[in-house]
Structure formats: C-alpha cells, structure tokens
Length: 255
Length: 318
Image 1 (cartoon, rainbow over the protein chains, first blue to last red):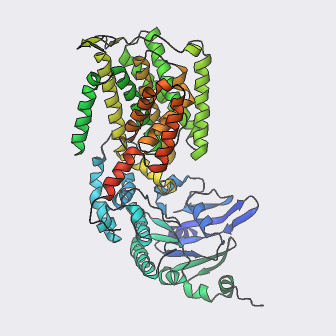
Image 2 (image 1 turned 120 degrees about the vertical axis):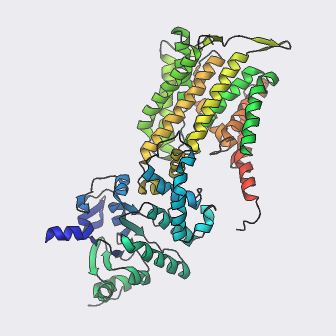
Image 3 (image 1 turned 90 degrees about the vertical axis):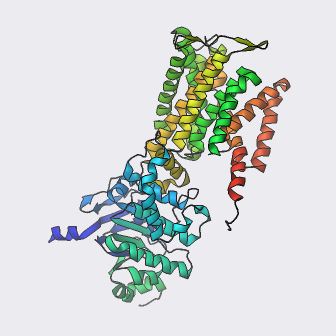
C-alpha cells in the first residue's frame, strides 16, 4: 500500500518546517502532490505560501523536515540540481530576461539540454538547431509574432506567457507556478488560465494562487495554508465549505 | 555593414603607426584590451570587480621578470603572463564569486591591495622603482621587436607595433566570440535575472567563475604586453587607480557594448596624454568629463549611438 502511494505522488513533504530566527513561517507541513494533477496552494497573506515554494525549490533551506521528489529525498540539494531533476518554478514577479528578446528567453532554457553552456569558443550559430523548437513554444503561448521584440516592452500578461513558454522549454515534470495571474486584468487572467490548463495535460502543476476563480476552474486539489500550517485540504467544493477556511478568508467570527 | 566596419577598423589599425606616434597607439591598444576584458565581467555578467589592476599589473610583473631574468621570448612572456593572471583570477574568483554587488567589489579591491603590497615589498619586484629595462626581445627568436625603422625621417618601432596589434586582435576576437557564444548567452541571462537562471538549472557560480577567469586572463594579456611596450612593470599597474580607471573607461565607452570599452579607453588615455602638461589637473578634467558623460548620456558613447539606431526604424509603434 505505501509503495503504491509513493508512486502516485510526485512530490511529498514530511513535517517541513522553516524558522526565521524565532518566527516559524512554515510549520510541519505535510504536502502530497499527486502525479498529473493541478494542485493549488492557497491561503491569506502571510500564510507562508511563497516560503513553501522557496523551500521546495531550495531557494531556502528547511529548518527541519524533508522533501521527496518521486520518492527521492531532495532536501539537501541545490536550486540548480532540483531544476535538473525536472522541477521548474516561476516567480511572483515576472521572471523574464528583460534585455533579451522573447526568442532568446526561450532559447536560454532550451540551451541547457545541449550541454554547451561553458563553450565560450563556439559561435552563437551553434544554437540554430534550437530555433524551430523555440518558435513552436512561442507559438503555443501566442507570442510568435513578437519573437524578436524587446521583452521589457511587452505587456505584463505577455511577459507571464513568455515565462511559461520558457518553463515549458525544459519540459519539466513538475511546474511550480507562484501566482501566475497576479496583477493581471480580467482578460489576461482568462488567457493564462487557459494556458495553464493546456500545459498541464501531461505534467504536474503546483500553484500558489490568490484568485479563487482561477483555483476553482483549474485545481484538482487544494491545500489551504494559514500561519504556516495546513488548515484544510481537499477538492474545491469541499474546502470552500469548510468553516475554518471561510473564517480565515472572510474573517467571519463564529463561536 | 558589420563586416565593413570591422574591415575598416582593421585597416585603420594597420595604418595607425604611420599616422600617430606608435608607442602611443600601442598604449591605447593595451588599455583597450584591458577595458574589453573588464567589460566581459561588468557589461555581460553584471559583476563589478574593483581589483582588475591586480591581473593587469600582476601579469606585467610576471612577464617583465621572466623576460628580463629568465630570457623568455616575448610571445612566451605574454603567454605565461596571461596564464599567471588566469590563475590569480581563479583564486580571486573562488573567494569572491558568491558575493553580490558592493561586497564583491570590496573583496576584489582588498585582494588587489594584497597584490599591490607584494609588488611593493617582494625582493624581486624592484619596490618603488618597479621592474625596469625589460627587454623587448626576439619574437619567436627571429624578429627583433626592439628594431626601429626610419620611414620619411621618423623612427618607427613597426615590429613591436604589429606584435602588439596582433595580440590585441586575438584578445579582442576571443572576447567577441565569448560574448557571442552559447556561454555568452547564459552570462547575459545571469546579468538580467540571476534567480531565474538558477531556476532553469544553470550552475550560476561556475559560469560566473569561468567569466571571471577569462576576464582576468585577458586583462593579464594586456598588462603583459604593456610591460614589453614600456619595458617597465610598475606599482601604477597594480594600484587601485588603475582598477578605477578601467571602470571609468568601460562606463564612458558603453557598458555591455562590444566597441564601447575601446572607445572609452582611447578617450581616457588620449585625455591623459593631451592634458599631461597640466599635471595633476588631468584628474580633475577627467573627473568632470566623467560626471558630464554620466549625466548626459548614461549608456556611454557607443551605447547611446546603438540606442539611437535601435529606436529609429519606423513601423515599430510602442
């Protein structure tokens, strides 16, 4: 039974805890992300969602507890190593390379597979074999026409789409999206929601999201964090009816 | 267009010693190479080293010493000087590369001061006088680099000049290639957004270290060559003034542009030469020039020109 369980879950945390000199930002979180699902992590401001993210991607070192990816303990690995295993994250503020073109942004990610990142004696034309794939990826997020524009001049929603294309370039098994629709207008939110749905087809996604509409329409499973601990977990309908969750979100007092 | 520009510059380089005092042109080339090497770090990787004189001057001492005392031929001298600077770069690099911003700058400065102190106190560096009378020697044991030709009554050290010019071209080409390589692409990505580069699976520290070593090596090439041109390795070469000057050159010419550091180096060296009659006022004039430049065109000479070209084409409405 336990063996079958661990094959089913791509990512698990066991009593994951993070202290910042006395302040416990994340406390004994046991998270299980099922393979092939879209899992959302929600919670009020300061609940520790982004800290959990940074722990999972090794940008922060856990105080205690462990993280398992496909059954392997990755608690002590470095950020780049985790990325090489197939866990790719996005950031809350759009993570693009602003002075490179969208085409180059995607190509940077594709380049990693070539293993030529230290080759300073090779011409840049040695990367031409990646051009076709880069355009395919840009096309899939609707940025093909803007491939050679200046990334810093793109609209916010387009930057986020570019970020997703860059992440997809690495064909990650597990995508961690940190508030993919944050700060977007309604139209862009719809577009990004569709995009996430599309890219989720053959991979697992764990996302932090504030917009509950997006969560309701996308997530298979939801974990609610509050003050660093898990408050509730389940499907959207189940979780949204949970009185504790309602209190945490609405601040409604009940005796 | 680009090819024509390079061809024109190359021809200008070939013709230069007949038009301008050759030693001056050689000085320009040495500092231009130094600034280009520095630019690989600050302009393309986003690392501000404040200790690059250690590589420039350190290599000058190594080359000067070996050519003078061990009888190395000049080309071997330059190669050994370059390797020595690369090794120093590796040591500096592993000590500093994890630091960010101002901390990185301060530690590189501190380490460079250690090199300065060694140059001042060590028994084989000539102390305050530096290493003097470094012979120019025989290139490959065949061509006398000290030979002076007389063309139209003017003495011209053409052998030495073309030796220096070739070194500059090779160094410049290596930097140009590194910038336009798969490696250079990732460096730019690190400069633009380091956390993102890490999250894509790049081992940023190793990549930065390699950039640092390449930059230090070529700064060393420039310093080694300089010690042959002036037949001197002095404390000025390893002093923090020189570290500061190369920052100035790169900023004036244009950070992160291929030709910017060359233009910047020419400007600073030419100003120093033209204004040398005013003594210490040179510093003031260059300081004022720098302030005016930074206030009126932040991107540097070349950077501003490129920006004009970029924003001009019609049909790109924002």
